[in-house]
Image (cartoon, rainbow over the protein chains, first blue to last red):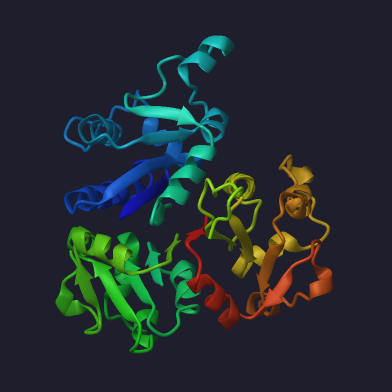
Length: 130
Length: 96
Length: 130
């Protein structure tokens, strides 16, 4: 089956991002397709490049980046949720004099249309929230 | 219909009140505490027998919850089983 | 069956239920949730908006979120029919919990029993919450 995932909660503050990640691993393992992971609300903080957890802890942001680079899963961060919370895409940051390296590798910033496309294309849509 | 619940309290109660015959409920994250036999008893123990109740094994293990302490009607799934529940049931409602 | 000369459908039409079961003022998530609803309608999906639990209070008249510099969501709810969203339903049991009657609601919504809502939910493709 094709699965669409939406993450509504920030990492570390809540287990949602962990549960989603483990679920995705199992789904891929079973041969399912994860069409897209869409980060919404405070979920956008999963894409913060400068997240630096202590060395002996799981690195949630890097784990997402690896999911994209190794498994090719599409990671999309909602542009309006992100801008509201201070996470700017490079070209926007340049324009407004903001921080241009905010978004971690493997994530792209886009609009809600990509969430809709993901949901319409998928057999199931799962939301993980706080 | 599959309900995925991630905490006890109002969230679980609101979900339980809306379950009907042949629904499936999966307890994840802090909702796994509802699988444990408690005094007074958890709302999970009041569910009709034609409702399937699952708990996510990893969340149980992480919290040191032994199956022996839980209601007999609870079934257990690992993440692969979680994926299977999602595949077998439609639609899916995430309650959080 | 397609007749000669008719255009094939480009997108699947699925049934989406958007469930509002909490107040719209407690976090910006309520406002961002309404954005998803409008986007779903823009993608020509069959959209049903359901108010239940504490969420029924989102429909009452005389909300003044401006006193806290919060955005008033009523103008957005008012415009749902403009987006062709005409299936707005409110759970009867939740209305009773709060002692609300239909004429206390600020917008037109069908009051439907929990069991009838459940029948509709079962045939939905995707359910959204926040």
